[in-house]
Length: 246
Image 1 (tube, rainbow, N blue to C red):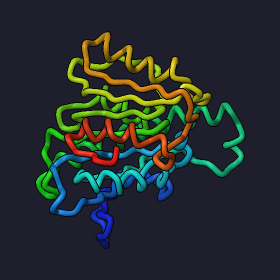
Image 2 (cartoon, one colour):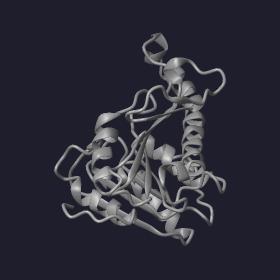
Image 3 (cartoon, one colour):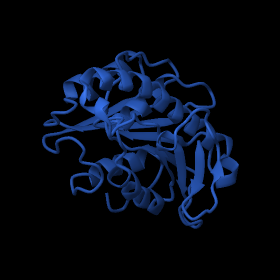
Image 4 (cartoon, helix red, strand yellow):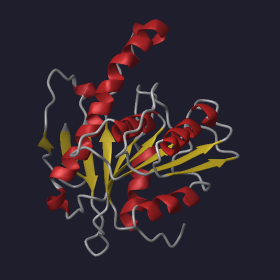
């Protein structure tokens, strides 16, 4: 995994074996002003159907807001499947690629949490205030991290926005508190098959969960629409931050 700071050059590099450049995971840290920093970290996992990453709409736009709250933000570019060839138009081939890439993307999410925790002192972070937030396919990654972690890679909270859902939802007893948000008119990942399933699994396991389903918004609303600030306000509350404008 390649680790870089927003204004750092060159980057400190972590090279996974047998990775093409187009599939190399990276983690970029965006630090808040020192006068605002509160020790909380959030790792952002953009969506994109495991084909590409919505880096701005579900990444850097939210970074600026998190930094304004004193939260240190990390944007994870997890590995995605190969595209741009004839196989991209073959549904069977796409299914095979998806089955192969998702475990690698989840591994990148786990590595990101453990990496941030191992270097918490460098960024003046509290080791028990490291969360992960995922959109769409990135929500799938974040949820899997919340369910399949070890002590080093366990996030302290998880937020899922219009998330994709792993086939099996079996949260462990130490799964972190979960925040969920989705639009009722989302045709790509309908709430009944996704957000509601997450909420139900967490509550059946006796775990903390909060869910918001909005009447309109569709899929992929990201951070750019005016309907999003109430959701951000709840995330701010979860991170222990004060959001005066939410």
